[in-house]
Amino acid sequence: MELEVGMAQPELMDVEAVQKALNRSRASVYRYANTDPQELNSPYDPKRLNPELRLNPNDPLLFHPNEVARFAKDVLGIRQVTIEVQESAQNASLEVLRAILAELKSIHQLLKSQSSNVNS
Image: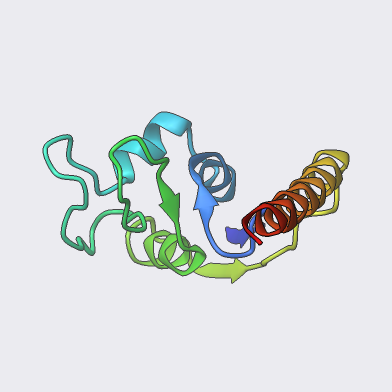
C-alpha cells in the first residue's frame, strides 16, 4: 500500500486530510492522536500520531505531514510512504477576502491621515 499525502495547506494537515491519507475513519484518527483531555499538549509518544502544539484547547488538531508519514510507516506498517504537498488553488472566497483586506487597509490609512490632520 502506498500512502500519498495531499494537502490544501502547504504546512499542516487537519483531521480530514489525515483520515483521507491513511484511509481510516475519522474516529480512528482521533484514537491514533496523542491527546489527553486533561493536558493541552501531551508529551511526544512514538506509538501515537502526535499533533502540532496548540495554544487553546478549542484549536483544531493539526498534523505535520512528516509526522503522518512517520506514523504510517512505524505504527501502521505502511511500507511505501509518499508525501505530496500541493498548494491550494485560488478560489472565489480567497479573492473576496483579499479584496476586503485591501479595502480595510485603505480605510485604515484614510482614518490615520484624517486623525493626523485633526491633531495638527
